[in-house]
Length: 424
Image (cartoon, rainbow, N blue to C red; front, side):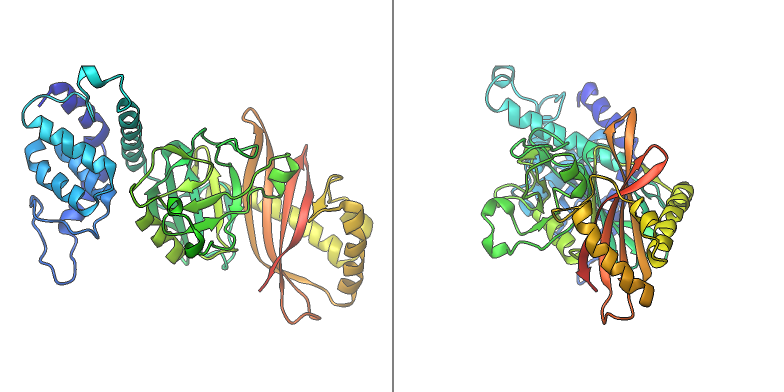
């Protein structure tokens, strides 16, 4: 094998202890009714093993100089996942290695390097590198995206997308805190991220929520096995003048297991098996979706001071509302406040009526969720908080779930959106 090829795979793959763990898990996993294979076995792996796990294990073997031993595994990968183009690419490379040196993934003869074949190969190389990079740079145990300041019990899961790694993570909110339970490759817009206008072929950045799923029967084959829309444009997007709609998390067309890193009109796309897992796990309306250019993973205590400080702001707002201090309460709202098309003055009339009722029957707030976001220039960001809570009143049989968007101006926090989301 070419020493250059060996080095390129070694520094990308062998350095990752995770890859070894994945291979170890793939070789030792037990399946019902099937004997346990040995660690060095090249016996058939059935389709339940994830395509990516198997691909990375093959890369590891190549990097270790075991190209011949990896060939049967690549053969099985292409058999079990016939539309996984990366699997076919590494299979072709392994066939070539049996007779000649190969210096890079998907190497083309010189006379083909400027043909139409070159661009798809470049996309596959990029996808391969993104998959390896994401698996080398796994989030540390006990950490979560920095945007999560506090979650209510209703938020069973959070979806977090890191565009820099082409990765989607699902975190479960359990008694022991947040932990990653799904970690998968995704594709974003053809023009990248940072959506601003309709048709710009970019994926939005921000904090969103899943809305009503699209009936698979109504979907064209392009969308694969299903679609989970998000609430783009959210109130912050609207405040910033962003336009567009129809941003979904969805699957792939039947002829492609996965799509290139930048391949969509703005949606987030994943392999159909991963989409099916996602749809089986998450709940609409209550599942936040964080889409970031690069996620920062932090331990809960790192967010504690920021959360406590902002919770004191919310407490002051609640006190003003429950005590009927209209002028004080009004000071918490931004002059450009909007609530489903109503300006602050129009909305305030109804709010005064609500305050009159509250004085007679005090309202309680519970199940608070606080998610943070930063917008604007990186060197001078503007802080935003997305707050969801249940408002419980003795004169209502059901509690009302409400959401607020707060923005920091100087040292002050102001509400620029407030509205009911659903009854619980």
